[in-house]
Amino acid sequence: MKKSHLTIYFIFVLTASIVLLNRYTAFHITDYRVHFFFDFFAASSFIIIIGHLFKKLQTNRSIFLTFISLGILLFAKAFLTWGGDWKTQIVLYRNIENGNKTIDFQMRADRFAFGYKKRIIQIYSLAPFMEWTTDVDTSYIDESKWKKIDLEINEMQFPKQKL
Image (cartoon, rainbow, N blue to C red; front, side):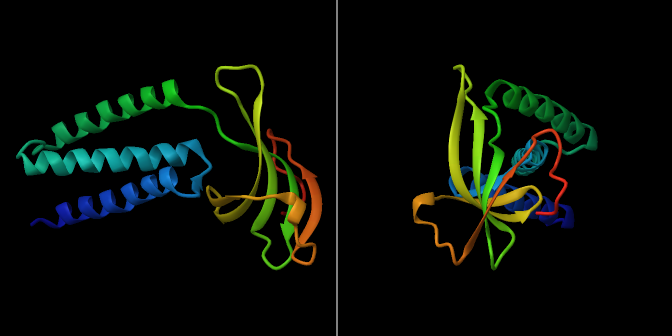
């Protein structure tokens, strides 16, 4: 087995795992560009693996054309099915022990109606574009662990104070 095949298998396992975690767990990719990146590489590496198994996609040209056509298809799918991203409107609480944990009020445009969907969740930031979200009831907040900050977030710019 070629070394390049092992690399493709590794890319597929890594990116497919992240896509599946994003879809079926509380893990969430917050940036649509990063989400597209993982979708693209998971799908393209899967197609290349299948192509190698059936003795297709042997040339660089065929692999390149597969990348281009798959990119166009994934872009069209994303454009037609994207429901919008949850955007933090107000950071309600920050964890005293761990600054990466917050409780946020978020809103998202309702796709086929006039209005917004709303939620209050606990967010644990793993990276600038990855987070772990959990539903939370703010009526049972332990004040010894959470500091109330009520920081309003402007969606067009980041807050001037460091979070």
